[in-house]
Image (cartoon, rainbow, N blue to C red; front, side, top):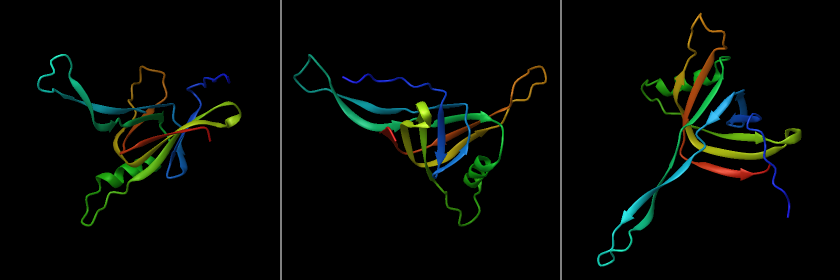
Length: 147
């Protein structure tokens, strides 16, 4: 039996429309959850049936050192409500790398848009880098093992 290797969570990338937009220091929200629908059956008092309901996907939350404006431009395209405006959704991939820059795991997200952008917090009493937070709403998450 082959031994499974655990990979470091620090070596990953995020691609949007096939282009690595920025380098992120964290990515969270790789979550898929099915709603549980309880159903009681008449005459059966010993148990409650649990049916599968709607599947929900959490928003992806990406944090990076504040740099560049390409993701800000994507966010601005969402808030632009001029006549004839059509939301430009995108697809992307969160990639976890293993040894030798080989793709170990990836999660594709589909039909996405940037629902929240949070700028850096400025505080002269701290010695930290400025961090930008981007939240991406999407409609699907597909896991792909390996390359």
